[in-house]
Length: 233
Image 1 (cartoon, rainbow, N blue to C red):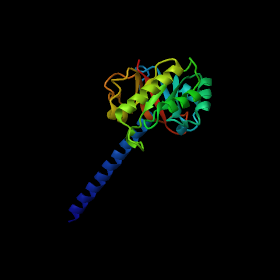
Image 2 (image 1 turned 60 degrees about the horizontal axis):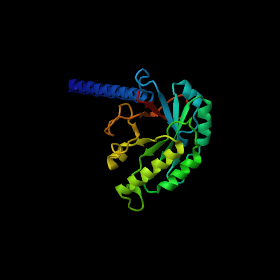
Image 3 (image 1 turned 60 degrees about the vertical axis):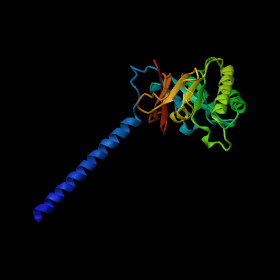
Image 4 (image 1 turned 135 degrees about the vertical axis):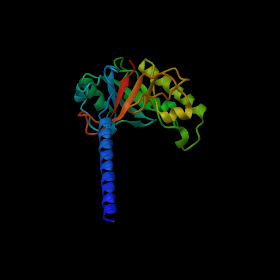
């Protein structure tokens, strides 16, 4: 009886040690992921996407950490403007970073109102990087039904209007969910920006130009996590 109890006790201690080891390994892997960026030798051009949700960001520190560019969240839908865009634009330029602007497409709204917000907020400046249009929200959340053809039509109108303002082709920042719903990546001849932490994404069915490689990178440039982006060499 005593031997059985001792054996059971050793088993319990062994299980506890295994659980502790698994916890330590898990925490280590989580820490590594939060501080992981792709190899600079493979992807020499690296940067970040920054918006108001990221809080105050020290762009000089970001530059010192290896960022060569930033894309700044600028406008959303037909009326939403990122409140930190003007401040972030000035600070990023002062830090010596190349800068681009991102508009988040809303399939529930007409293109004219959306492009008007972007054009009003983002200066027409040849020094800016090509504009990016984030495609994430689908029409499933719209109060009124919006068909797939209408979504594509309004998106093309928005692309043309933003490109006319910027004077260069836009980059389409396509989420996995949006691509799964509309399958537009192969039909729209624009450079792609895809997202997948740690592993290169392939959900668009063709090569990408930009890759959000870590959606929650911890750096000394910000109190919170930021989105780390690399360029296809």
